[in-house]
Image (cartoon, rainbow, N blue to C red; front, side, top):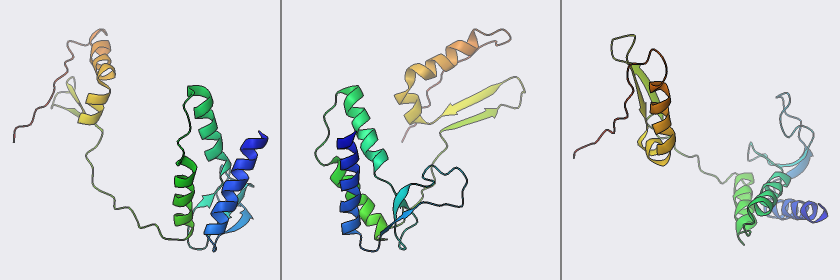
Length: 155
């Protein structure tokens, strides 16, 4: 714990040194039960974010402990650089693209017939779960049939 605490403190000091507009303060948000309530954070007038390094250190330590995975050498440096950029107010707004919905449920004009459509990434990456979504309802009383249909597009 002493080493993790030292690492979190060091990360906070590095971030503060590279983001001169940032200052340490106790987080007192207007939102009740905000997860950083009463925690020491780095705050900048150029950014809306509150920076608190201990969770980052705890997550990485937990990953290493549970998975036995080695820490990427640049993991903390990359995170700190991103935080410094945010605290300096240098982040450009990310454009929000109109995406297709991940799931859609519709009826085919009959109250007893439903069509559930899943985004192709979900259907591909979670194929077993999608198969279960078809198999389990098909075994329920009152369900006449359930099918998995793969939409194919022709260009």
